[in-house]
Length: 374
Image (cartoon, rainbow, N blue to C red; front, side, top):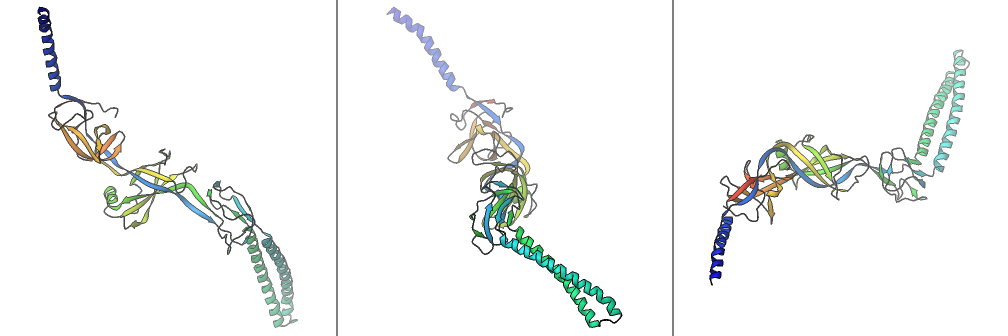
């Protein structure tokens, strides 16, 4: 009995100290890391979903009708300007050229005879050895012979030109499509193969950006629509479908002259140099760009913003070290920060930790987190 009493006297102070420690622990404010919302001069960053378009295309159509005898390219591969693509049967054109050459030779011979007759007739007419009518006849024959030579020369040029059409060369650099025509097909004007193929020039590619008209007027600082928007966009980047970022920056090309009435949008066309043909026509593209001039915007670390069921919120730590739940409207991201369009003012303090434990009006112990590495 005495032993039990001694143990009770010994344990009682320990239990009392433990209870006091737990009570003190429960009464201490929650320690949370905090950071100030800060205002910085930033561009408005926008993302757009679009597709890539070729710079321009060339349609390859034979200028004459003939049989296809050969093709000298691989479908879907790059071709160079001046590269031979197709060869047509030239037997008819070669025969026409030879006939035109013969006709020119005959016309030149007749012209020599007509000139000599005219030159002989002139002194004879001066001594009245021949009549004026005969001189006029020799003069007319000489003029007609010269005209016949010119006509024959032009016919030969046309025949040579038609013969040259039997070889079809690439007019541009680009990627050539496949052709439906095969060796032995009758191709050209008036046939089912009036078009042989197309070539897309993708040395540079284009991407359309659709910008709502009201946003355009706000960001551009203009009171009405303008076709000159070369300074509106900056730092234009392209992200491909696999998430990789295209290494070359984009540039402004032009603004389309029509405005989509139903959507109220203007189309700004940006371009990307494509020296390795890595970008293809019709390819998916996500464009990120800065729009307009920089303006003051509020930013907070992304860690401070909670997003649930389309509601974004932060915990604001008031000057009296009490917590306040605050709904916010985030804009775009800026590195590891959210740009906050509505809900927070410059200099307000937001909590980075303890979000699951905080309650409105709850007293906390704020510890300022360094933002040097943010």
